[in-house]
Length: 181
Length: 148
Image (cartoon, rainbow over all chains, first blue to last red; front, top):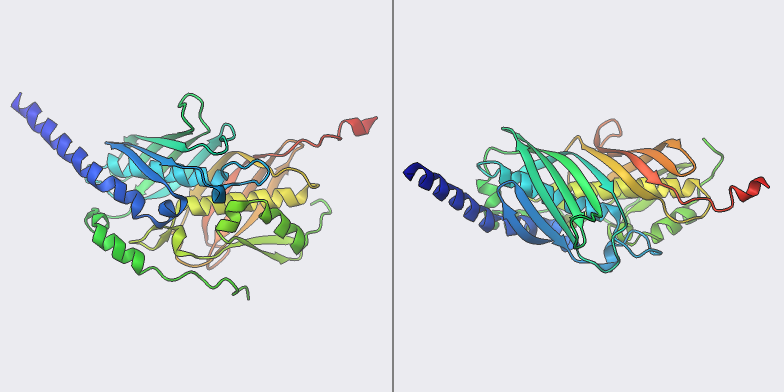
């Protein structure tokens, strides 16, 4: 009984840490912020993000729907967050590979939701499945399968919002537009 | 391959139809009939600021755009091809600098094409990411009726 209680406490502490950390994982990722991704929910090995529709993210002027690459970025981000949360120490990860199936066109103007599940995690690798849909999870826009690898021993540094903000400020400026050479 | 010839204006027209490609400032570089697309570095395509690494999604979108533009240019003017299923392998970290990509059409059928795309930064032989996948081509409406 007491043992169970201890395990319960550890789990809720871990969940609390994840909820504290997860929003920053989107906020503190320049490309996720650039696309307008929003954090929705986190659990151990699971993550949900959303992406409101934006005209600048369209893939074809004639259809007015999201560029496939935008869904790639959203699925990658949600899957990466699910992977991070699946490691006991919440480790930062890099994508090894990502496969995406595009089931149907998204509907113009609709927010896309990505739900990711890290269904198996080894010491350094996480295997993640994800679904992107626009309201009905049984009618997906796209699905993905990815594997991620940890990139550091612990997240202490990358977790600190201050360190991350500093790192973003230190990024080199954009390469010169006119520099075609 | 088939006798198609590219010109800068055509490529610009294809990219103009893809707002997101413009948003990423993707631009073409044409050498003979070989098309290379350039993804200029910008802080907003960073995925991990601690490692100064490009976002896998931004690189993926760039590879996919390269495949779509290449396929579109090889056919007659028609709707843009759509991705069906793509595989992305991330081989090296994308550093905060310009990225290049070139597509090879492995097989072009009447409805579906298989495409391989390579993205690199310093050297072509050292790809940072590789895409292979299937794309749906718009049906040629008058192909069958031509037989008459």
